[in-house]
Image 1 (cartoon, rainbow over the protein chains, first blue to last red):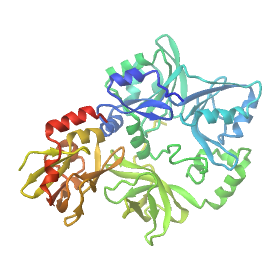
Image 2 (image 1 turned 30 degrees about the vertical axis):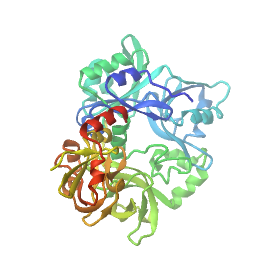
Image 3 (image 1 turned 180 degrees about the horizontal axis):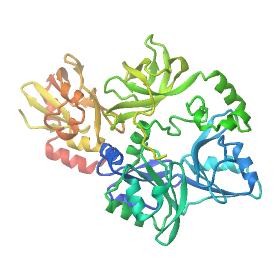
Image 4 (image 1 turned 90 degrees about the vertical axis):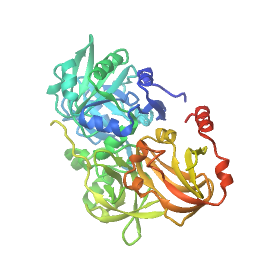
Amino acid sequence: MEIQKTALYNYHKNLGAKFVPFAGYEMPIQYKDGIVKEHISTRTHAGFFDVSHMGQFFLEGDETLIESLEKIIPADLKNLKINHSKYSFLLNNEGGIIDDLIITRTEKGFCIILNAACKENDIKQISQLLKNNHKHLLNNNLSLIALQGPKSVEILDKLIPGVANLKFMTGNNFNYAGEKLYVTRSGYTGEDGFEISISNKKVEKLIDYLISNEVKPIGLGARDTLRLEAGLCLYGHDLNEKINPVEANLKWAIAKKRKEVGGFNGWEKIKDLLAKGSEKIRVGIKPDGKVIARENTKIFSLENNEIGFVTSGTFGPSVNAPVAMGYVKSEFSKIGTSIQLEVRGKKYGGKISELPFYKKSYVK
Amino acid sequence: MSEKKFSKKHEWVSLDGDVATVGITKHATEMLGDIVFVEVPDAGKAVEKEGQAAVVESTKAASDVYSPISGEITEGNKAIADDPGSVNTDPEGASWFFKLKIKDKGEYDSLMSKDEYDKFCKENPS
């Protein structure tokens, strides 16, 4: 498959981006400032992220569309209000996570934001459940820009008046440069901020404005350190098809009503796990010293029994210490439990930690 | 102290009598990005030319640091293990990685000069 580029590719290049192939796209990993500075400037001012590689998948249809989608998505879509969003998943028959996503109710149906690496398969899985009168479209004419950080609201509201009134996980249509665009108050950094769905033709103009307001470009590197500090999962690392939402410690994301009534893929298994608890569970991990426990690091008990593995690990610039997430046997998942991490053949101490590592500041 | 010599794996070496000081080059730190973890060898450890001797990690990934010269470690720089970010600020000065007693000065002589190394980096961009 030919490597794809987002509409902002040349813009990133001019900003001094270093590119890496990611999910079939050539994406900026960092710019001139580097990961730590990009991370800090997002937390203290604001940063923008080109996340146009993610799928913007639109669905339209009558009430039977909800029935179709609820078979694979365990959110309460029936009671999701227009312009409200939920974090949810696509589930396979065993309750394993095919992808994690944000679904928003639109006037005509739904918009789902899908991970770039999964979007093709996601659409295949969803399409199988749709009826003839349901329409769907992966809109590649749209870019998606995340604006994140404490100054985001002030900066964006000056350009697009009214966005300041949005609450976390809600959105609306706005006018900008003679075009309609859709803005949600959301993101994946643990900061207040927005995701802006804008036509490829207008996106450079939006970025010009953000840069003139000292909003820094932020690459995938800092996106990873930011989301990990915020305790958020990265699909393909912390989540995959063999992991279900109970194990992933994401049972909160299954709607209460759906937990009781079911009717979605893997419900029986999930219901069972909700009652009994799962054998392993996702936890936060803080190594004791400076050592970084990266993905696939083995986790041991103090008695030297292997009890789990790390799925994401890095240095957290705002925590100013290494942070990690991983799966351990549930009996070792209590906050504060001492563990050992095997890095380069040596065992280092660590503790099961609360998530997030960095306190979120969403506007609810 | 002798002039600095350079390896293709982006380490530098300076020589004082039979004790060599080894660090990573400015070019290496620019490729690595923000350095957040360093592990240096303990005194007494024997290292081979181009053998793994230390570890450096950036926010992105972990990399091995090789010794461009064989010998016995006399000192690891604990200061950079305590403050890994200092390697980004002064890689070719205060933030050296380790010192070792060398066996064969010929290994030092065969490394690249500053000019040769700069040329090598230009011809082999990351």
